[in-house]
Amino acid sequence: MIHETTPTTQVALNMGPQHPSTHGVLRLELMLEGEVIVGCNPIIGYLHRGIEKIGEARSYPGFLPYTDRLDYLSSASNNLAYVQAVEKLIELEVPERARYLRVMLLELNRIASHLVFVATFANDLGATTAFLYGFREREPIMDMFEMWTGARLTQSWIRIGGVAGDIPEGFAEAARSFCAMLLPRLQEYDRLLTGNHIFRARTEGVGLLSRDVGINYGCSGPTLRGSGEPYDIRRAEPHEVYDRLNFDVVTDDSADCMGRYRVRIEEMRQSVRIVEQCLSQLPAGEVLARLPRVVRPPEGEAWGRVESPRGDFGCFVVSDGGPQPLRVRIRAPSFYHMGALPEMLRGWKIGDVVAILGSLDIVLGEIDR
Amino acid sequence: MGSPVTLHSRPAEIALAAWSIVKGLAVTLRNALRPSVTRDYPARRTALHPRFRGKLGHKRAEDGRPRCTACMACEKVCPTLAIREIEGDEAKGRERRVRTYVWDASRCLFCNLCVEACPFDAIELGQEYSIVGDSREQTCFDLEDLLEPAGKGESR
Ligand code: SF4
Ligand code: SF4
Image (cartoon, rainbow over all chains, first blue to last red; front, side, top):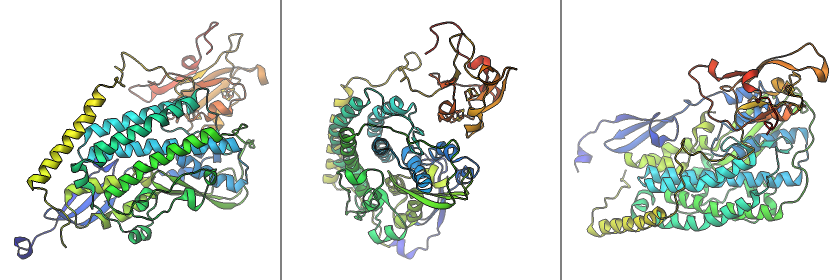
């Protein structure tokens, strides 16, 4: 009653850029009425490195390692989007084996990224133990990346024309035993988190994003699928060998934080399926197509599109026939999710900000570029 | 605007939350009994995989001379200009040998492009990963620092 009769002043509150729950350097300018959020203005750009501009001053293969630094939790998907655009420009045929290896690298990256999501999301909501479990499960993947590509995070392993190197001896066994280990562990998380009453109270019905609003804001990936829209680039526009692999596009109709969380948990299971299929279908042969010493695509433009762990990751490359791109443009899914955030926060209390923001699984590296 | 927040204050709710904690602790207990996955770094270090991409190194040929012929292919391909000041001696072509070579670790992306570009298989990204210094100069390495120690059996 007091609430309705007493005029309240609105208070502006800055959250971030050093807040540990903003997943990097994001600043949220929140307008509060008491504890309730009436407005939010995300302020981005703290991690801006001008990567798109750098692309105009590097050779085509030389820009590749920079794309790793966009969405650093899943560098393979960035590599692939860029490489696909360039391959479309020069009309290059990629060896079959390399296509499978790319998919495998991508899916392992997806599992690793979703594990980080589970870990940090749980941590934001106060479940520190789950944080450690997520990172523990991720470690064998990092180890496998090191074994295969020599780097844990920024692999730069997908190259124009294929992948830089074949999987080493023992990798297939390591991947199979990892897949076998992950499935029961995921069940354990289900018991620890999904069934946890406190976790559910903080996520169920919180931060609703209706399907239409999501589509209008350009959301994609698990964020949109958590609102019941079965949109997945791997199905909508199959790239590499996804059209030959069996997997389900996971959706959840609840449209809340819990729904987005459940989609990601289930997606890990699907990724395990894909990795196992890749391992068993892997054809023999070359992994890297022959390229001229200097890559000079003919004049033109091309889009590369990949389903990254965060959504529809795109890369647009314009060529003027020279050895360097005329323009490189990155479409980062997190950026669009950031746009929908104020919509999702309105009406919720300040304690829910970390839950809602965490459920979007943003990476500032790709937003700020 | 109706606040979507509900208060969880009923005794039943509290009991449910408490039960959730007990269930969670059961998982924690099971994990506490699993073998430890962490190591006491730096006392005990994990073995790195042979492909690990760390500090750049120059290889020697069988005759002990550096394999590098100062052809500049690596300098040209490096996207961050981390390789610079390559100079060779007076000899020409394949007989030429590198005299100066600077690799700046603070600029390097460890992308492997230089290694792949080298036509003489003269460089590699090695196993050393803790490259630290107080200043920019200390992260720049010249040929002396990069060349693998002389003598047989050193070549990995
Ligand atoms: S690894 Fe990449 S960034 Fe580092 S020196 Fe070689 S080409 Fe340059
Ligand atoms: S390291 Fe290899 S690519 Fe670089 S200058 Fe020497 S021979 Fe040429």
